[in-house]
Amino acid sequence: MRPALEAWVEETALLFEGAGLPRMAGRVLAWLLVAHPPEQTAREIGEALGVSKGALSPALHLLVRLGLAERLRRPGERADRYAVRPGAWRRLLLQKVQALGLFREQAERGLALVGEGRGERLRAMRDLYAFFEEELPKLLERFREEG
Image (tube, rainbow, N blue to C red; front, top):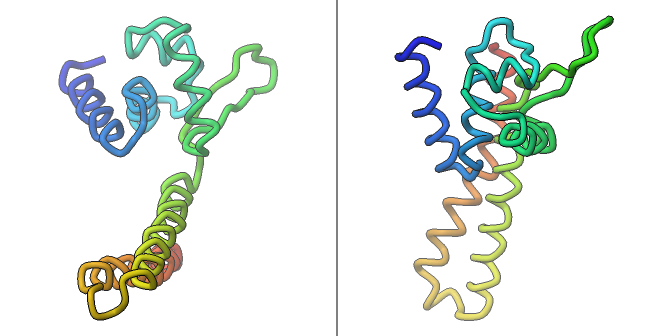
């Protein structure tokens, strides 16, 4: 892998790590975003990243479980291949919408306990999360229609 591309993969892995993925899973996902061909065997991924199959296997399983990658098999081949799952980013954002709802609900429960008079900060939290909970699905739909 070219040094500039290797640096990009590592930077992107750090970005994914900041979003909650383990570093190795972030490295694998970053590599799958730029790999050619887009479907890679575990051996190919391991060679590109300079890691063992043992280090790679949990990351691949996690990415498949999260719906960010998919496992494929080409006819006549024995090895599984992995690729970024189509629609992965949309699904990931829709999962975030569910999390936004949890934050909104928590703020509403807090407001019920302290009352509207003392709940300025909770109202701000509730209103922000309610806004994104409502608007993000609309934006995703608009993106799908325009894409």
